Image (cartoon, one colour):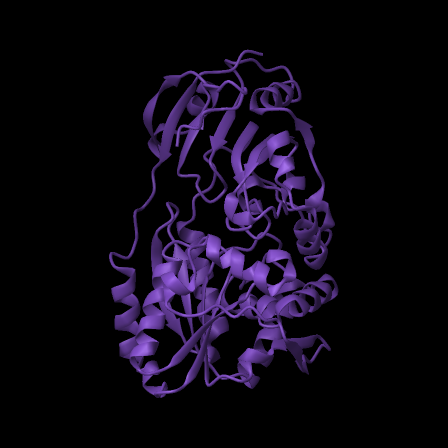
Length: 417
C-alpha cells in the first residue's frame, strides 16, 4: 500500500478553562480559611504525583508560597507508588522531569521511603504509610480527577486513589493493587483512603480537572470528609467535557509517544479502547485494528508500561526501555501483560508498512488512519482522507491538507506538531 496523504484537523470542543490558576487557588484557599490553621514553624507535607498535569508546577509553587508566608516548613512528598523504579531518588527524578524541583517549587523533595503499617481496613487490607506523613503537622495533596485506565467506578483517579497508591509508597501500591484483584479497585481505594483520612493530619486536597486541550477546567479545595462525594461529582464533570477519538472504527492508530507522565498505563486505555486487565471487562469502543507506537516520552524515564497494548513499535522505542523500572511498575500494578514487547521494526516507515499489511483489503484511498501525539493530546490530529470523510464535518475543523507523510534520512516520520 502507498502511504495516504493526510489532513491536519482539530476537534471542536467547548473551551472551558480557568483564566488564572494561581489566582483561583489563592482566592479559594483564602475563602476556606484553611491556611489559618497553619502557624509559624508548622511542618507541612504536600503530596505530588507522577502525571504531567496542566499547570501542576504552578499550583504547587503557589501553594508552597502561601504556606511559607505563614512561616511553615514545606516539603514535597512523591506520592506515586512504584514509579521511578520504586526508589526515593528515582521518584525525585520523575518529579524533576515534570519541572517539580526545589528551584521551581520552592520546597525540598523528600527522597526517603521509610514506611510502616498504620492500620488495616475492614476487609483486612494492610495500610502502610510513609513516616513523614505521621511526623508532620499538616498534609495537603494535589491531584487531577479523571477516569482511570484500569477500572470503572464512581471514583477513579483522584485524591483517594493518590492516597491509596502513594501514601504507603511502594509497599502501599503493592497492597492496594493486590487486594484490588479480589475486592475490586474502587472498594479497595475507598477503604484505604478512609483509614488515611481518619488517622493522618490531612488539611485538604486540591482537585484539578483538565480540559480536553490540556488546560485547567476546575480547581476545587476539598475537605477530607468530602473527598469521596466531591470526587464523584468532579469525575462526572470530567467525563462530560472529555473528548474521544473522532471515529469508532479505525484501521491504524499511529501514536508518537507512550509514557507514565501521560497516563498510569502509558496509553490512556479509555482513549484506545484496550484495557488488557484480567479483572476488568475490555472496552467495546473505539475499535482499532492496529496500533503503531513510535517512541517513549523523556519524562517516563524508560518506564514502558502499556507498550503491550500496541501491535507494532520501533527499535528506538524498545532501546529506551528500562526493563527493571517497567517490570517493577507492571508487577506492582498486577498487569504484567502491559510489559509485553510488540513486533519491533527498525523505523517508522517499516512499522507503518507492516501495520498496513495487517488490516485487511485496504488501500491509501480507503484506509482509516489517525495519527496523534499521545493519548492526552487528541484534539489536534492527522487523518487520512477516508478517515476525514467518515467524521461528521460539524465535529472538526480542517487546518490544512492534503499533505504528504514526510520521513527523515532514517525513515522516521517528521512529526507535524
